[in-house]
Structures are given as C-alpha cells and as structure tokens.
Image (cartoon, rainbow, N blue to C red):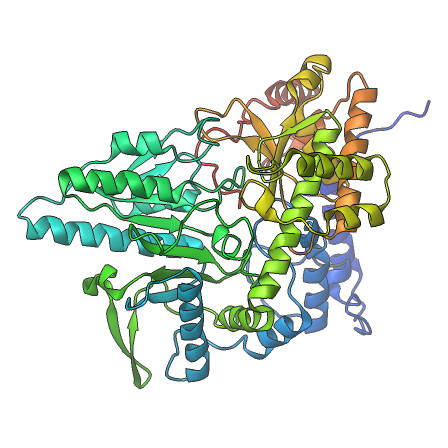
Length: 570
C-alpha cells in the first residue's frame, strides 16, 4: 500500500499563485473569456474592490461559473417562489428592467397596470359592491403583512384614544406555525405577539378555541393564514370570524382579521375545492388580505400585494402624499425605489391566463400533489401529514377506492394512459382543500424496524441527486416530529414527478439495505476556515493535540432547526 502524506490545498494554491505572479510576466492576448490573469495567475477579488477592472466577458464567465454551484431552481422543491417564467415574461422583464415603480409620473402606463392588478385582485377576493377597495404592490408578502398589521394597530390606537383609553399594550394573535414575517411585525412595531400553540387536532394551524381564550380589549387583530408553510392546510377563517363576531356582540369590541394569503390567495379562488369555507371579503370581519405574486401568482421574485376591502380601513395618518419628480402621489409602503418589471409580469399573467388558465394550473398542481402523496403512502414507508389527498367526507367510497387503485397501479408500473383515463374527470372538490404541498415523514412502524435510519439522511441523499427537499421540525409544541416537504409548483410535470418518486424509493431502499450508513460528513455544518497560523512554530505534538480536539468538537455547535426562529421555509 502506498503511503500518502496530507497536503494543505490552501498552501499549495498560495504557493502556485505566488510563483505565477512572480515568474510569469507574459501578457495574455485575451482571445477567450478565460484567457485573462484571473484564469490562473490572480484570484478573483471577493471582499475588496479591485484596483483595476477586468474584461466584461471574463467577469461574466467567472460569475456564471460560480453560480453553477447553486441548486437548480426547478428541482428546488423547498420553495414556494415561482421558478418558471415563459419567454414573453422574460422579454417583458428585460425590456422594463430599468423602470422604477416609485417613478409614477415618469411611467404612467406601468402605474396604470399596477392599479389594474389591485382591482383584479379585489374582485377576485369578492369585495362587496359599494366598497371602495384600496391596495398596493409590495416587494413581497413580508412587506404586505407589515403594512396590514400596522394599519390594524393604528385603527386600534385611534379607537382607544377616541374612547379616552390608553393605547400602550397592543397585542396580536397568530399560530406558532406563522411564517417569520408575522412575528417580525410584532417585534418591529412594538406589539405583543400572542403566538398560540398548534397541534394535530388543529391540523398544526391556528386553533379557534385558543383564539377565543386569548382575545381582549387590547387585541388589534388576528393574523389568519390561508396556507400553512408546514403542511399546506388552510386556517379556518370563517370559524375564527364567528368567534370574533360573538366576542363583539358580548363586549362591543371589534377585532379585525388580516388574512395572510401569501400562497393561498392565488390558489383557493381558482380551485374547485376553494378553501373549504369562506375566507375572503365575503366575510365582513376580514378587513385586509395579502398575497405573493411571485408564488402561485406566477410572477417573478419580488412582488406582493395587499388589499383593504375599503379605504376606511386604511388610516389616513399612514398615507403620505409625495411630491416627487413633478408629480403628486399617495403612498403607503415601507420601501420607495423598487423594480417595476415584476408588476408588469403580474399583469401579463393575469390577462394571458385568465381565470380558466389559473384554474387549470392550480388543479394540475393539486392533482400532482395528490399523486405524490398517495404514491408515498403506498410504499408503507411514509405517511403524509398534509391532507390534500384525503377525500372529503362527502366523497362516495367508490370514488376514493378508484383513485387509490389508480395510484397503486401507477406506483407498481401501471400504464400512464390508464391513469389519465381514470383521473380525467376528478377535481380538487373531492378532496380536503389546501395548498399543493406534500409534507411527509417516516411511519412509526418503519422507524421501529429501521432504527438506524434518520429522516434527515433521506433529505441529504436526495440533495446529492439534485433534489432540494427540506427536513425540519413542526412548530414548537409539536417539534418532536420532523417532516420532509415538497411544494408542487407549475413546473412539476408528471414525468418529473415520476422521477422524484423513483429517487425517493431508491434512496430509501439503499438505506434499508445498509445496516449502517456513515453520513456524518454530510451532517457537519460548513465552518469558516480557521485563521492561518505559522505552522513552523507548532510542535508535532501540538498539531496532533489540536487535531484531536477538533475531532471531539465536531457537531457540538450544531443545533436542530426547531430551536429559535426557523419559520422561514417558504
């Protein structure tokens, strides 16, 4: 056996670079993007502005090559953010990339399209006749949530002041499944966040019974989520509205609802299943709704929307009249300059797809999510925590059994044509309403039989095959359970879904066939390189001792995602 000595790659690269820069003075001809000093003589600047520039094509090639290390967006099944835009959307983006949404007087056509989007969404969410809906584009749902929460806080303050009461202790209710932006609002704007625990009983969502127990005269509102990022369940907006109606009848205190429909705002209106119950402006208790245009609105990353059912619910004190670049505009945002192209793409999608186009896409997403759910459960290795594949109580048993047989046939190699034939007439109306999200975990029986297999390992091995599927704990109070989660977006085709199921099965079989799989290296967190020291000053024994200590410390600083604020997986 050949003996091999350890080589420090940083030392080798540093030595070679020194040799090249000191000995090689040849002027490069720059015939290709790679024929520059950055090719091998000089390291690309990373943390300091270079003294001299570099050829544009060379810099472009280096940046493009480094970005190849990123995951493939279409295989990033962790994100709700849209990763597919058609050719026309890309053209519109390129043609309008220089337009600033804040320059309304300079770009009146873009402003008009933004206003049309607000009207389209207000109508889509069933604003009542006679109400004067008002809204705004935002950079995403995070900003929209802050604007909605701030409006509720200001209205609560104005009411308290009018009644001669103090306004020092506002609170707002949300479930512990809430995305981190909701909690940020409370922290940034000095509102007590009453984060209510979730449970399996409440589908890991906001529990109406706990809402009843925690509202009082200082409650500025309730954040209700139309589409939990954990399991895709819709929170019961109508049921919570009834509780708040009862509370007002008893106390005279009017507590509004803001619906965080970051994902569901573009899913529920179009699917046959809807949201399972009323959730939008049909409920008088709902005063404002936000959504992300860059999620199931199918626009590009960087656009969200917030709509108030009537301008009376947006306090005038929060609206600024700006005199800018020759024009006057009303503004209620946390940002000023921001890209306008995403808004134009949103308008393009609304007109291009129309209601029927969005319905077809959302129904396809749900159908594929149901197929994935049933395929996973058919293996007997996994069980789904999400529920969009479970028939509603009103579905005839024969239909449910027919669907089950179809899926099992597909998993066992049945023909795709037969599956399409059997499933051609079904819609989401036959199933529990929710987002096209598949949250699943290893079954209890599987974990008892294969104790050595950790669920996180499945995620890591799938990542090695290109798939990005996160494994993380359910919200606090239920964080003893970890889930794997797949967001089924528009670009998840049947063939890609077939490949995903195959890879999940193969990865699981590989783990089953190996009693022990040493994947510790995959679990180690990436660490910054240690500060360089003069190795010549270290004794041989000292180096060995340091190495041994580092080995003992591996993993000590690692923490589970359940600790701290981690609800940003969207």
